[in-house]
Amino acid sequence: MSTASDDLTGRTAIVTGASKGIGRSIAELFAARGANVVLGARSAPLLGDVAAGIAERGGGAVEVEVDVMAEDAPGRLVAAAVDAFGGVDILVNNAGGNSFMTPLATMRFSGWRKTLDLNLDSIVRLIQEALPHLVASGHGVIVNVSSVTALRGSPLMAHYGAAKAALVSLTQSLAIETAGDGIRVNALVPGWIATDLTGFLRTDETVESHVLDRVPMRRWGTPDEIAQGALFLASDASSFMTGQSLVLDGGLSAQP
Image 1 (tube, one colour):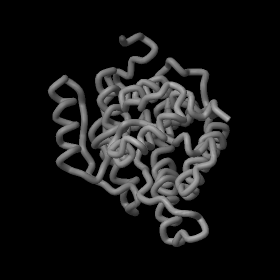
Image 2 (tube, rainbow, N blue to C red; image 1 turned 90 degrees about the vertical axis):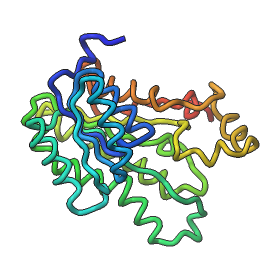
Image 3 (cartoon, one colour; image 1 turned 60 degrees about the vertical axis):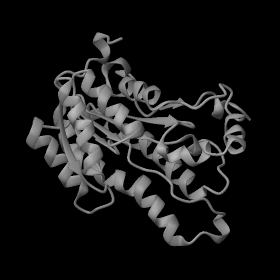
Image 4 (tube, one colour; image 1 turned 120 degrees about the vertical axis):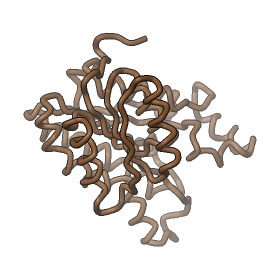
């Protein structure tokens, strides 16, 4: 149900990793609440499907086929928003992920570096590019999508957990730096969500059971549930909230 406080009519949002999973759900929900959406991801066909669906429902969306780690990615995403819709009001840094699990002792440093580049460095570059436009907006918002791995030890995923924990710290520092410019910065912290990223954990019943045994609610979260959290953080419903982390993990991080 839509309310006045979560109405995004007239605002423009950049959403990275928007072709599927959490990013797609966020983009579609924002568009349903009236926002114009710039969709960034590597897969042009999947982006086209998302944009077409938004257009069919009367929303505004443009696609930018982009790898967020590319040097020109920040400029292309921001330029697309400015050219198509006149500015940037909301930035959702959702693109990220982890492609391997290994002990830190034997990890190749190239793997560490690539993980940090994707989940942290690329976000910093995009934030720097978007900040002048977010200031000009008068109600700029940044939502950084972190992970529950930022909040607790993650054996075999120290690289990913470290990147996502750094993103939470970045969120806090940036929130203080930009509050005077009218910008709010918060982190969205999902737990185990049923997406392609976690698909390998659902193909084996024993592995899946081990994962869900640690979740008090005993189920996977859905991308749509995470999108609702992103809407709260991006909209005026959270107008007095900045520098915080909204954890949606079924109770996982509450356990010892």
